[in-house]
Length: 352
Image 1: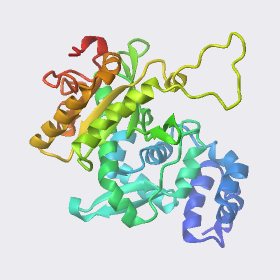
Image 2: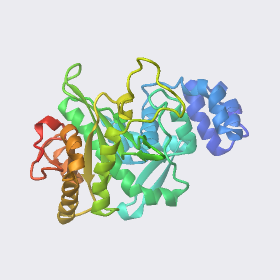
Image 3: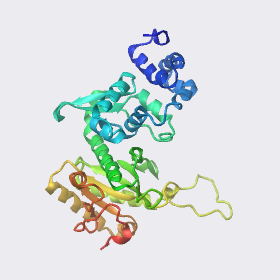
Image 4: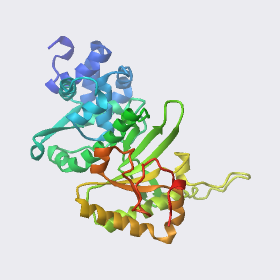
């Protein structure tokens, strides 16, 4: 222990390593004491200056950013997302160090061969949220303790595994999809307190760098925790989002020549993202039951325009992981006998 960290707890001394070690040990004591008194205030004041100086190319930074954004990941998932070119032992050491610094925590899943699962602490989220690549994102709902984290692990890890599949596929094909191009739980308002919150929003550039097209997708991961009809009702929710025009503030009159209000999603996307259903945690019969429900919902005449405009596809997670998401493993909900790549445009899908 040195004089800079004397009097601090062992965890706070660990936090000093990430602040002092990366941006100068002389700053760490005041920052850590301020953090213990008021975490938010510490970061908004001197802490902000410390955090933003962290090396943007550092593997520690990317690992923390991935965990803050993805909510939860196994050691193997973090390794493939952050540093696939090095030995996994280096990733293990990195995660252990981040845990000692108080930035992340872990649980062990005994039913999965004692697999370690990592998630960010409140301190880790505060640190990462100051970085430009995560600024403006809604902070994740943190697990209150290890039991809460364990109960949330199944669905969250399935979301992470799906995002990892797209990142790996892009690397293999020469497309562009970085780890932070997979953004869980992006809030989209429908007004009156309602919202559509996909399990993830995907940004993906299809084609060689500098050419090709930018694709976006809302991704819903279904692990059979709700009935098939409730799953299928999500198509209608996205159709509502597609048509939703936010109401102007009460009492405000449009100025002369002011353009007519437009759909809310157009403020964020040039085109409405395609909708992908990833089906998991059921066998072949369960997959067919859920695709049948999606197909039945797609028969609603009110959805015809939406389905002509937006590709809505479904695929089993097992097929995605085995073949890769770019392969024709996806089934259009209105014509489920077809098999297409997820990049297929609505114009190339046959709508009955």
